[in-house]
Image (cartoon, rainbow, N blue to C red; front, side):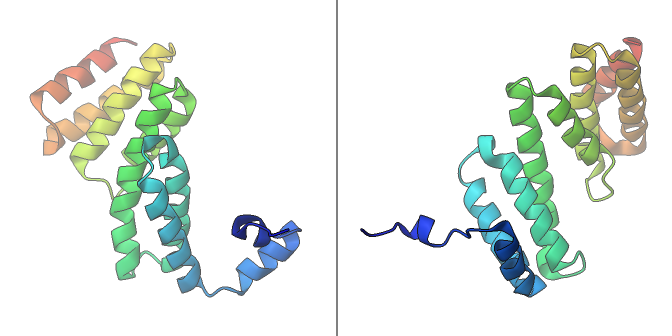
Length: 165
């Protein structure tokens, strides 16, 4: 009886699997996680959270200063938005909020991306009756807007978030 390739390469013990993984140089780990993320990214938003985990691992092993690390940062940010949006659509508000807050506090995100993230967090916190958090996100979004990171509509939405508390 022939075994499928998928089952033939499964490790029987987690310790063996981890030992083999630990033998891989960081650059190979980064490349493999990058490939896994790229494949998952083609499958749509439902797998965006899993792609995001591989992008984070690839970036960790590649190093932020490397050319691959810089390219992965942009993909990680895009995957974060896709995963947060998917979690929201599935009413997994806590998971979505974690991602939006991570984006909002990221120094790598552009100001308009941080504003978008705070505004999405306002919606989630209002929907879950966390009004103090909505106000905090509203104030943060407004501050970013005032420094040139958002539109007039963004400012209005931020003020509405502040007004809910």
